[in-house]
Image (cartoon, rainbow, N blue to C red):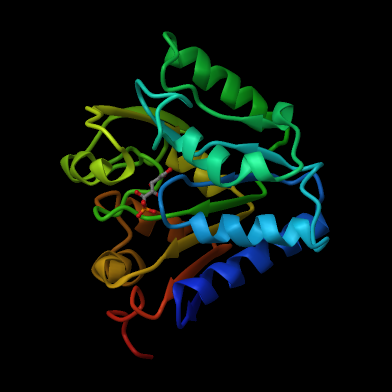
Length: 243
Ligand code: F6R
């Protein structure tokens, strides 16, 4: 595990964007997964800028979604897919046929999972995954006490996830379940980046990095992959032991 600490959210986001650019330069047809939510938003901004200024070319990349709220699709502002199209995919050169997202509104979620499985398998594995962390330690919708052996999941949302969800939506949205890449697929990724910023994430980051590896704190399971890089701003890192 590598831990990278930067002073500000902006510096942290810039560092991650630069590291993603290196991955794409080394493998232009990389399969990349970027979490929705607020944390990676600035990274997306820097990545768009990197392509605009000729530092990277995303036209051969493939992107896959991490998760979605069951019942929501791109037409709901604040869904994962809407967030990422608005803040990223609409501004880069990747053709839409190279982007595969879960449709949370699909009648048959098992078919969504089957198609996602085929899409990922056709690339063997995810080259790079950028994750945020929930206040309960979830990654994607791998909620506390998740079965770490599952490759894809449809799960009831943890009460903390439901409570926090209100920050994404401009109207009341009653979310109950999530569809997500499971811990097994996440752990098979070649390069895992876990990103957190802000003092509100300091306690959960300490537990995830220094506590027992356990499915009670799903993010702690990421430590099983030696290619884990943890990116923190100074506030999110503030509770870590000082050695
Ligand atoms: C979103 C996702 C979630 C978030 C996490 C942090 O697609 O997978 O696991 O990454 O809840 O959310 P923010 O970044 O909004 O604090």
